[in-house]
Length: 123
Image 1 (tube, rainbow, N blue to C red):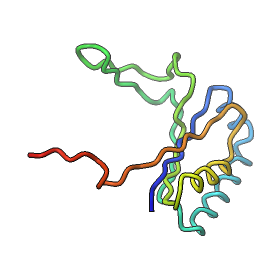
Image 2: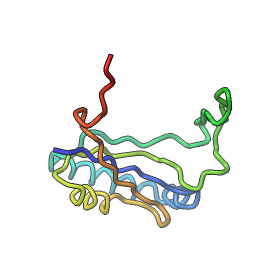
Image 3: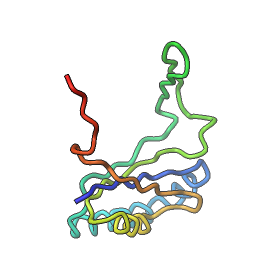
Image 4: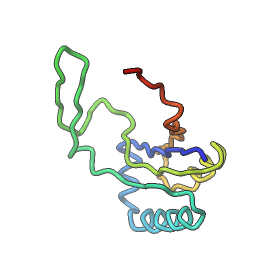
């Protein structure tokens, strides 16, 4: 069965709204995870720390440049993910629609190619 990554993306505003109601958001998320486990589709799920705690390694120049967060130019931040093994993209989308999210947040649904689909390098 194919795998799909549900990528949680938020803005400063949607993240602040989520934090304002974090107890309800976490309870709803725990229920969703329980439902995914019962359905046998959840492979992994993780949230990420505050973006102010991260860094960006930028390869635009000759040598990599490391910049501490938060990232002033970023309009959407990657906040976490669910990795599902489901029968179709539509099934992944249906699960994505159930993810608790604040207004302005987005869930990106991307298929994870199998190892047989990745180009092989001859040695």
